[in-house]
Image (cartoon, rainbow, N blue to C red; front, side):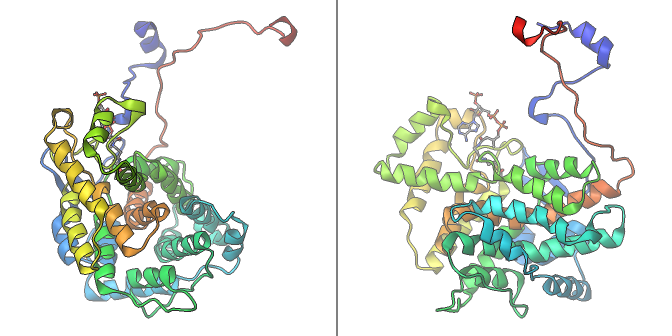
Length: 402
Ligand code: ACO
């Protein structure tokens, strides 16, 4: 035990809040989330409306600038992004240097960080022009970097961007075209991916956005702040969950599709097994994104004429969990990641690319939060306190006396 009175005397009042479950790190006007009622809104617009009627680029504009763009504003924004889709030729040598089995998330974060070596006009976060051009460059180049990472993993030659295509279409083509066969963009796939990116575009103070803010609060540049966010996203409890869900479903399939014995393992907490794609820190009734994505999974799979035994396993898992007291009493519902992997797989992406797709979607949210943080005069460097539990004091002994 430690002496709380003594600690207060030393530090003033310190709140211990593991995982910051009750601590607001900032004020924000970007995303509204009501976990009890399952409400998610970007700048006041319900996620359902944006996913149904909006596009990813206008959603990105909305998050970053606070308002939906007019026709002219959208054309300018799109035009600027289109102009910056190419990567410097020297970036190719980064990919040459990565081992062939490098994880795409590791390549993504390294190259995003390395963008700050190419753009010396990106290092001053208080220069509005620098903030703008860095924002455009990131939005334009992340799909190109993601596609290069895929090509590296496949051992295929890279495909350069084509600026007559839309944002998502261009990404799909850079990913799936090979010299022997030009990829014909399927509108069903492009629309579904655009919708998925919108659904991932922001989620207030999640682990990766908080990371972007805390790194940015030291006045580090946008590229390295975003790179830190990509690292945070990679973990299986955050964006890595979409890949972990698919691995879990494949595991269950290998065991003959026995959903009941998997649920038993989860309930017994055998080796820390969790039902991946279930549970959320804030949503306690349902995740509104998961509702939309579940419907999209059915639509995409049937439009592509793909039946997937894994979808059947996922549906059975969900049904089984939602009628089990273990999950009900802990308010565990499917989250955004439960069905996304099945859609990505039907589109032809390998599991290792799933979290990269999450990063493409989340990028505007990270950028919007970094802008909000850096332009807020009340921002202070992120610097949590601690409750020290170590040895109070002792004397040094020379090594030969220990
Ligand atoms: N499967 C089984 N049990 C779970 C799960 C799960 N998916 N999630 C939470 N629990 C249990 C915990 O074991 C704990 O039980 P206990 O009270 O008996 O110890 C209780 O529910 C509360 O769980 P916490 O871990 O305290 O909840 P927290 O808010 O810290 O974690 C998280 C939220 C990380 C999302 C968690 O639910 C989880 O690990 N889910 C699986 C991973 C996942 O899908 N992550 C994606 C999240 S969404 C996103 O990032 C886009």
